[in-house]
Length: 312
Image (tube, rainbow, N blue to C red; front, side, top):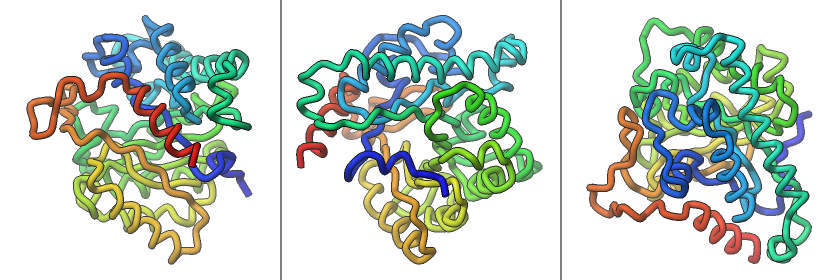
């Protein structure tokens, strides 16, 4: 039976914050374009390292690789060869692993005093939804070509997963911002039929449009049930979802997991409540409750959560 690495952390495992958000607001990087933060794998590796380090220093237990928007097909569309595309995906893992190891080696006493016996942080290989590759906001709608099959989507994810796993150091796969039951079923098929993927723990998180339904309209409960018996899926939950929807969504997920007798844990990393424009790849600030400075010092939010949870 696969170990769930998230359970190495007592009570709560704290994820890092948004990589792209910190790059944009913390380092003033321009991430426009179809590859979003993955573009920096080609021309600004140091900034990615800086963000990983900021989150570790703030108390994050996980570094999520800069591969969310990256795919072999996506990089090839920007002019990369297949070999160059594979190397960029592997590089995303190498950056996270090296930064994590440097953090562990250099951790200051002040950091360790607030987190006694802190386990070694994890590296999660980010695998964005098929809609993220389309770069048209479909990860927030689930509106895919109706001719797509489960095998098509499973194959798309497999190519990235195999490449990411070919670089040593991945602790867990992160299938993120999944918008539909169809894609959840595709991931379940991949995890149950592909030996390489099945040999590594994974989490699956969904983008949700209200307190019951994921982006495409199915209930989160349906999606969790589709994954509850998949052996290497160790966590399910939500991301890129309004905070006010999170509690009822997780309650519905927990109910299904209990009914299915699943040992999977819940994972949650919502947005701030602002509205994201998936086509323009930017947060809209001119909405009720929005404010230009809301995402300032994202690492500071992680630090606050870390201190709040780890000192209980």
